Length: 538
Ligand code: HEC
Ligand code: HEC
Ligand code: HEC
Ligand code: HEC
Ligand code: HEC
Ligand code: HEC
Ligand code: HEC
Ligand code: HEC
Ligand code: HEC
Ligand code: HEC
Ligand code: HEC
Image 1 (cartoon, rainbow, N blue to C red):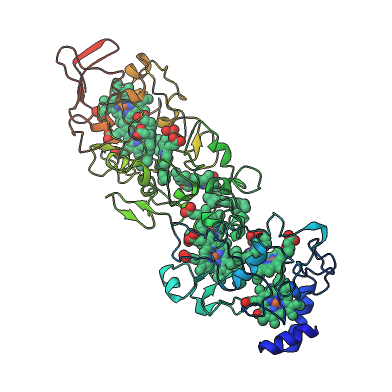
Image 2: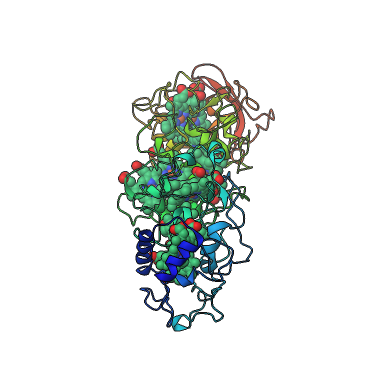
């Protein structure tokens, strides 16, 4: 300890002897004791001094505290992401001291005070590959070497003002966040040389005001989803290469309490969610868990249509007028991000008289007819509705688009395309059955009371659906008909014919439905060889 005492005295570091002794004691039992007496497998062949690997009283570099190592000159890749407000630069200050071993470029035993490199046992020179070797690519590590000041905290409401940091977390030069803000090279009390325990995320929560919404299960701790160093995702420091793989490490049926979402993603019709986390270069057609669930604000609870479910958290969206919203109030606003004005689909599922892939226009309150997703429906006479449903009811997109077969709720994946919660045949000549149109029969009665096959509204429903094996989709659009395209004469009652099955009437050349008031109308068309020139019902 005599050398060390001199160090302290010479450089005038205001550290009391007993503190030094305490430090000496605490370093010696840690992996940072690289002397031959050190506890770790990485230690000197014969060198017995503990502090010499980092400090020396003589010939030290100009770097305080009497630093005994050559500083790395490597050019580092630094952390970046689309949501970052700070601009991390090349490592500076005490971070360079750590990197003089932990970037793996400089021999552990290469110190300024010795002419010869101190030999490490087992022929080890630089820090071996593994989690302790961060490399020179720091783009996958927690950002360092930037000013964490109140101006940054002002830009990012999720950051605590650095003035209120706990004293254990020192900022270099009073504002720079460095390795030494989270680590103390001398003290391994909490493991990983952390300045405080991170057992209940209290280290992370000292700076980030983020409350993982679901405090139970796998969401209680930041490190359930995040990895501070050498993160496979890079941006956002996730534990896996992308959001989906991060979530499905638990949501794959292997963790009790965590719903199995992975098996839904292996179905036929899915949201393609395995896209890379690369926010600086987003690929156009993608959807990840985080597009619909804000991982930090989702909470259990309940909601009824159209209010957004609390499990989706405070996620952004596009509202019914087409404007962006920070936090969606309604589920459909989340879907409108990708299935409205900027849509991932340029053609509709079935060929129709009127083609529209902007679901915002299909479900608009101005639309000609529509299922009541954004506003109550137009038709006061819908006799087929089952108990629980009325003409004032509202519904979610996810009442029709969700996992089939009673899996987890949510728009994840289904074997009934396009991502439908139940079977819905669209082919011509489909024999009618409760299961063929199970989707519609969830809410519309089939053949009891005022059911579809009882012909209460369209008195030829049964003739067409059962007699001619016509699918519902031959006549009906499941979404709605936009007012830019349809008219209330021709497109009431979700009528939008499938043009691969229904053709213009050969006599008049017209392909047209005409609404003639309550439960009355007529059609001009050709179907199954039958010309309607027109045919009328009332
Ligand atoms: C593995 C490298 C390493 C070893 C070994 C090491 N130190 Fe340090 N020490 C550092 C670093 C890095 C700093 C700078 C910390 C900072 O800037 O916040 C430091 C700073 C200090 C300081 C300045 C006050 C402080 O705590 O910031 C003293 C005193 C000190 N060390 C004493 C010792 C003594 C005594 C030993 C041997 C028992 C020792 N160190 C071993 C890395 C080491
Ligand atoms: C003299 C070289 C050297 C310097 C300088 C150094 N370390 Fe280390 N550090 C090591 C070695 C060697 C290990 C053991 C690695 C292993 O066992 O894989 C280690 C281990 C660690 C560990 C893992 C501890 C554990 O329990 O496994 C952390 C965290 C760490 N160092 C942080 C730092 C930080 C932060 C700094 C700068 C303040 C720093 N180190 C400076 C050499 C150094
Ligand atoms: C914001 C806090 C924070 C900063 C800044 C930080 N670390 Fe860490 N570090 C941690 C935490 C927390 C762990 C524990 C492992 C984990 O939770 O992923 C850790 C673990 C480590 C480990 C052990 C290996 C591992 O990956 O588990 C090393 C080595 C390490 N840090 C070195 C550094 C170095 C070098 C720097 C600066 C370049 C640095 N750390 C900056 C928080 C931080
Ligand atoms: C000493 C304060 C501090 C601690 C402790 C800390 N962070 Fe940070 N972290 C920050 C600051 C400041 C930023 C930069 C934020 C910005 O620029 O928008 C940041 C950035 C991040 C980012 C990148 C944000 C982005 O927009 O790309 C992630 C992810 C992150 N921290 C996670 C963690 C986790 C997990 C922990 C705990 C292991 C942790 N942080 C501990 C202060 C801290
Ligand atoms: C470390 C494991 C783990 C990871 C990683 C994880 N989860 Fe979870 N998740 C759970 C567990 C366990 C529950 C059950 C919590 C409870 O009920 O206490 C849960 C519950 C949920 C719930 C609430 C379900 C309900 O009905 O209450 C949602 C939504 C959810 N997770 C989404 C996600 C998303 C999105 C991700 C990725 C960003 C993710 N999870 C990552 C373990 C995890
Ligand atoms: C259930 C998984 C999960 C948990 C738990 C979690 N995160 Fe995240 N976090 C994510 C995902 C996924 C992203 C990326 C979001 C995206 O792609 O937009 C993220 C992004 C971030 C970001 C950058 C963007 C932003 O929102 O500022 C920070 C910082 C962050 N997390 C910190 C934390 C901290 C601190 C904790 C613990 C208090 C935590 N996270 C807990 C999954 C999680
Ligand atoms: C971030 C963008 C995004 C958001 C938000 C989004 N989707 Fe999608 N959706 C997609 C992409 C991309 C596909 C195509 C997936 C593929 O082909 O693999 C898709 C496909 C679909 C499909 C058709 C699947 C098929 O097999 O063709 C339906 C139905 C669907 N989404 C409904 C919804 C609903 C309902 C919501 C709101 C709860 C929603 N989407 C939110 C991007 C998104
Ligand atoms: C009443 C049930 C129902 C509701 C509610 C519903 N859909 Fe659909 N959706 C379908 C059916 C059925 C199809 C298959 C297309 C067809 O038969 O014409 C479909 C097709 C799609 C497709 C495939 C591409 C296309 O345009 O044909 C997307 C994307 C889609 N729906 C998104 C949504 C979104 C977003 C919402 C809410 C804003 C929504 N759906 C509400 C039943 C529904
Ligand atoms: C297109 C939007 C969308 C995407 C993408 C998405 N979800 Fe969901 N998720 C939902 C909706 C909507 C719900 C249902 C909320 C409700 O119950 O009404 C939900 C529900 C859940 C639930 C609760 C299931 C239950 O039965 O309680 C979990 C867990 C979940 N999602 C996890 C995930 C994970 C993990 C991912 C990524 C692999 C993901 N989600 C991707 C929209 C989405
Ligand atoms: C040949 C064309 C055609 C086919 C096929 C068809 N419909 Fe209709 N449907 C109509 C017409 C026309 C109306 C309007 C009746 C009116 O004037 O109110 C209608 C009205 C409805 C209504 C609203 C009134 C009510 O009875 O509640 C529902 C619901 C409905 N159809 C569901 C279905 C379902 C479900 C299927 C398939 C099982 C189907 N339709 C098949 C032409 C058809
Ligand atoms: C989640 C419940 C639900 C499902 C599933 C559902 N509907 Fe409806 N449907 C309703 C409600 C509620 C109304 C009443 C809207 C109104 O008053 O205009 C309605 C109205 C209708 C109308 C009359 C619209 C008008 O303006 O006259 C038709 C036609 C219709 N549905 C057909 C279908 C078809 C075809 C399917 C299967 C693809 C289906 N529905 C699936 C709930 C549902």
